[in-house]
Length: 305
Image (cartoon, rainbow, N blue to C red; front, side, top):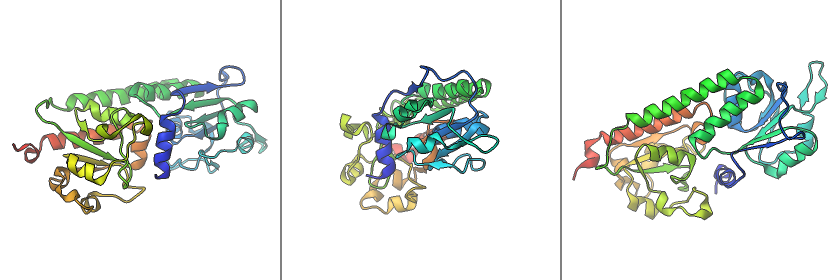
């Protein structure tokens, strides 16, 4: 299983969507001047709401925004509490501990170790719903002193999602089957996941649902035979960056040329980063999903009796 798929499953079966661990029982009221973000999603959010100047270190996978990220990097999947405790710098150059550390996965029990060192920790696990995703954004706004901007971003995302859902015409007579690919070994996601729920809200039938079980936490690995037999009319590729998958090489896989999505050109490439995060660029993902769905619904070739 690919490393990022292991991460998906790990955070899917992790703790609650928002866990606050603090030496005082709550994060201090003072606005933090040194934040360490061990979550790419949280990092995007912090910069989007105007808290970027307060962030002094991020995890190794953080790559957005394209400019302005701190050079100090930490492996979020194997963090060390002692190194994090001294990673911040004061104006006169002295090392100091962070005011706030944000994580999305409690690797190495880092939350407990940092708390023992007197460092406030917020855990924002992978969102399981739109409400959770938006709540995480507004929470970071409150914790960092950027309430107004955070609330505005959350409201804009909610409006985008609602508008996209309403823009899809009713299609009870059209069973739009969809396959969402996470990696070339055919790991997918079911409707029980965050992105799966977004797809479901657009009225599609997710072919991964029939293959998912409690053991895979909503991220089943499909067989080639099953996927070919399911014959999805629409395919979303969320492995275009990591694995260089595109419509052309997807179609060349054994047996895939018979799929309706391949025959009629309904294969949508997504940005891995945007598709795997649940922060301020969520609206872009929703727009991409909606365009793909509407395009397939409008293609008469898919609906010939």
